[in-house]
Length: 432
Image (tube, rainbow, N blue to C red):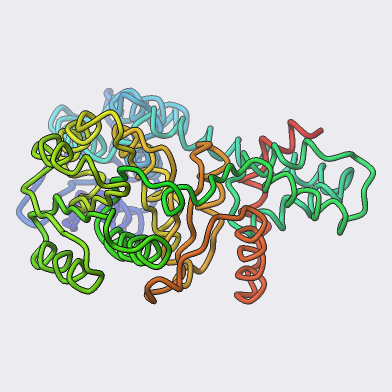
């Protein structure tokens, strides 16, 4: 009988050394951990009542155990220990039987190694719920792609219209509504013109009544949307038509540096009185004092739609007087999501109309058009520059849409097919 000791960095290497030196008929007499690796004592021509593990079977067992570790790391089962055992028995049942015949110290070594690997697997396990959500998203994407491809084959005109409305930046749900309202047998150019006409009908506009008949108007909106510039344009138009006597300017902005001085400067240029107060809580008393004025224009502090003070400020403004109207000022250059959020957050002020500013800075008007169609908020003015009062125009829905089409063409915008299939998958089902 030939007995020999082998040392290696891990059990796999040690078994390989035994197999190379003594052949597949060698048996493992003992194994233990040592500093820097493991130690195996193996023998050949060994005969005993209690059979030991041949090297080939032990190698297979070790490889099967390594496969089990891989399954544990991949999170194949919510219970890593169960995954470990199941993978071992699925991969090498004979090897599992052989391992049971190892000596106690060898079996303990394997058990300790298993526990270490399992602990690592538990830390890196994949959340089953997250995996299911990922699979659901993948399935929805595939179904949307199939629905879009089917619609492209059966209704190419409708598909092309959805593409063109997407290029304009129209929200996908609104685009689907518009296309669904069109007659089925139309040429593409005619269908596109009709879709634009339907958009214009859904945008409500109000006449230029403040400059004509006066009122008490407070400009509300987020920081930097152009409220003060809009107020200056309206004030200048009033003075040009009616003179300065029946006009008053008010600012409640005590936050922005120079805001009050800016309004006083405008008042001196136009020859009209300008008043600065610390907030909307002081408005009722001031408005009583200005009861003889036909037009009172109020500039409010610009607050972010996420500012915690916004709700209280808007509530005070809404209760400042029965004659007071609020006008929401929105930057057309803002992203579609920011526009929708601003409309939702400033709804507490109960605006009666809105004005789109900074049209000259916008790369797309789809977000503004979608907001106007979805919210039903009337549009009063369009502002497209800094000149006072030239760059202010009464709202016209068809002109706004024509400008949106011109912007998309000049930008050379195009629609991505993958994005279209994901965006309009549900719409394609509805149009089927």
